[in-house]
Amino acid sequence: MKPANGVCFKMNNALFDEKEAGQYLSIFGEDKMGCLWQEFLQDTTETLETIESQDREDIRLKFHSWRSSAKVFGLKSFVQQCENIENMAINGENIENIKKTIDNCKKIFHNAQKEANRFFKRCSYGKISNAK
Image 1 (cartoon, rainbow, N blue to C red):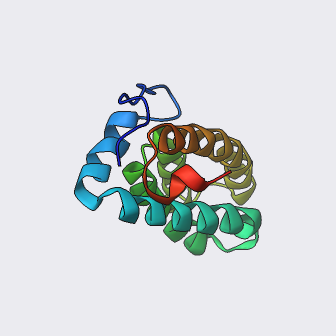
Image 2 (cartoon, helix red, strand yellow):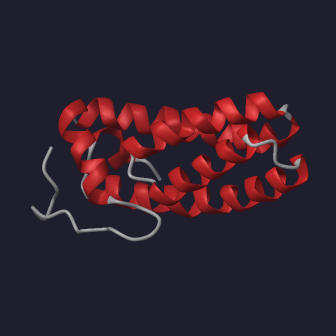
């Protein structure tokens, strides 16, 4: 499916990297990428609500997983925060400091996913074009 105007606008900033998302889009295809994005968005949004109540190892594992998944969608600021939190957990950082970083990470994810949604909508990829 081609963009309605024939052009996808470049959206590279601290939050979102269109080039990264576009590379994976060419690998997975539009429909699969749209489905993967929706699943990632739902899982991450839901899990971020309760992640702070989990133990250090569960936090580490979740942020490790999100780090690689978020890269597929070009969420570069979220990827960086996930790596920071994963390293904090590995290095035995105080859990309160980890929780403060998680709070910041939630804000970054919220803003980064808005940029990704704009990209997917603007480019009319897969099921994203129908998202509100």
